[in-house]
Length: 326
Image (cartoon, rainbow, N blue to C red; front, side, top):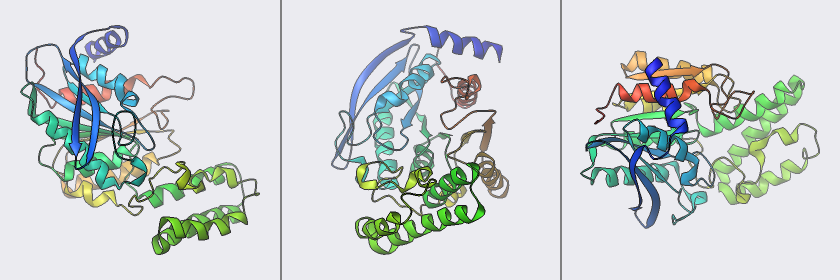
């Protein structure tokens, strides 16, 4: 462990410890995705990890730090601009989780085509919303060797959105009656979207929002912002009832799920319990790590830097499962 800590420290302060970086493009149907491939020094072929984004308009830069860190440990990495961001075409606002999973798999195929990549040791990392996308992608391909999720949820998007907003209201000290009002409003939102679709459903929902918009607790319902203004954590046409449990139950690759104990966006203990149940009942290779005091971004409240255990956990877990060249 001490050796690993020293390596990670050197990665933080060193520059140019990987062999080279290449600007690459790959396609999923009509969508062209642009990214950066970072190759370690040492002999080919290398194990590799492709990084999947969280929600919203995310570029490759959101994953660059850890991509470079992995490369310095002998693991090639592929980061890319989400569709409709940076140099990538398409529009992330009008996609399903399945589309994003296929984007990631297009990146896997790019890696497989290269002689400097070990095609049997390609993994996918997904943070936040990517915690749904990574296992979904792995469930659709035999070319994914392992996955890592960070602050990913085992709940449906609707359940998670309701849990977040209701938790905000409850933790602010509002009465049970107010908590129930917030909960009912969330249920109404999704019911209308299911029955009427995003546009018509939201138009009808706006009428209900006007009745509570001036309530002091309304701003805490962050998931109630108009999705057409790019402020919702799921895209327009996303599968709001996507259930990740069957996906995990059918996975046949090792999984590392990292959760933040202080995450107010994803319930760490409940998520861990579901994963442990799947591990036991379905005999799956699932490792769950809950990082003490870590929030959704794996930071502690006292600072913006991720907790040291975050990088240590990921790198040590990967190095136990791949062959790194010297």
